[in-house]
Length: 260
Ligand code: CIR
Image (cartoon, rainbow, N blue to C red):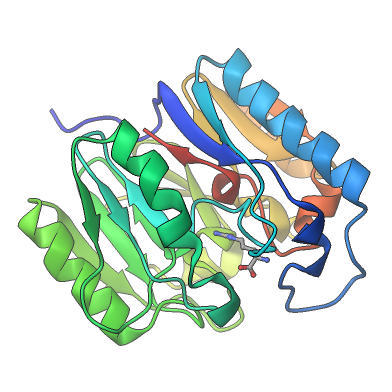
């Protein structure tokens, strides 16, 4: 049986540095408030711990404002970690900064070959397959290199094109079960995942599509009551997390950790 992709014992997270206020954002809704953002990050790590995950905390990296979003520069499986090459020029050194920690935690650390770019936020794992979304951050060259690398590890890989306007594939979707995807209506209608059931996020609550299923719980951003009620009705143990400041940086729950 393929391994579950919603059960984790370990994670890596990186504390936000002061420079996080200069993090990338597509629409500028003002810089995040540093103290509140740090509280949100601490609450996130605390929740992961409460649901049974041992979190390896990394120190802030001031030279990379977006480096608390550790999901983008790497991809991890129990048997290996892959250093990616983020698409945003300001994030290109984040993989090298993560490498020493990954080497202490994984039996093997591989690197994305070639010149292309790929962000971990564009990679969705299901038990049987890996989906890579093309985006402003993940280009055709990076996706092709990742397809070859994952293929050599025995993974089945699909490259998909999310609808325009999606920063990362997982900005618009996340797995709430091994075979059930929570997704925005636009992504659901694009029908990119024939082997998954799709739960559509209620209209107006699209930012909450980036939920995080961890062990028995589903973590979602606070402030999206229709989605919280929908998930609770479906029997999920829903945990609400304050995320207002993190969301000002176009980020969500999955991107603040690497999990395995
Ligand atoms: C960025 O634009 O790279 C950061 N401000 C946010 C990254 C969020 N990552 C993700 O959704 N996977």
